[in-house]
Picture 1: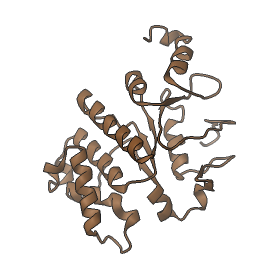
Picture 2: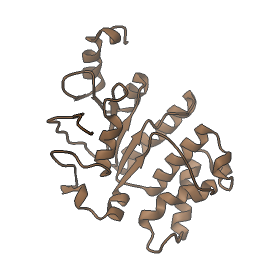
Picture 3: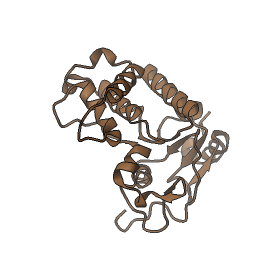
Picture 4: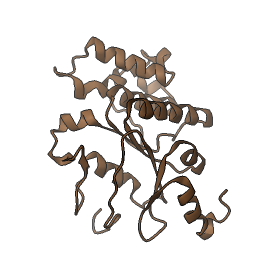
Length: 229
């Protein structure tokens, strides 16, 4: 990123059917990592592969079918309804420019139902609260139905109950359909309850990837984590 190295000599294999959390201080490169895994950035060295193929060799539309990215900030700049916004997630699957098939509409409605916003399907998107907009963005990715979910702080703007509901929904999707989920989170409780493995960035000389028990032990050695339970 510019002249700054965020990850060096880092290699990892992320497996389908698993949930990975990414933890680290602000500015350590968590968002940049997700953007790199999504193909929006090219690493200065090395490569990112999906199903043994470099993601940068994939046609952009094919890549969009396989990889879904939730940005850190949920911003909707165009006037549309909630349902129309969720239908944007179906674009990679469409054979005609912005032609919504019956299947597209069904998938979008199902995704809205999953995040408990089906009653707001016809409401203008700009009338929603921050938490509701966040769930609309998540519904769009559920409707997209990618093999890989890359979610940047999916729990932001959500209250405590909604955080657990949304993350439980995502875990069920990943486990049931053998998808891959990599998400950034700041809450250790959420990381412990929902992630199979955690990638820690920015606290040590090298990134650390492992189960919560391993990460917990390493973090407790740091002065500001000494009281972590």
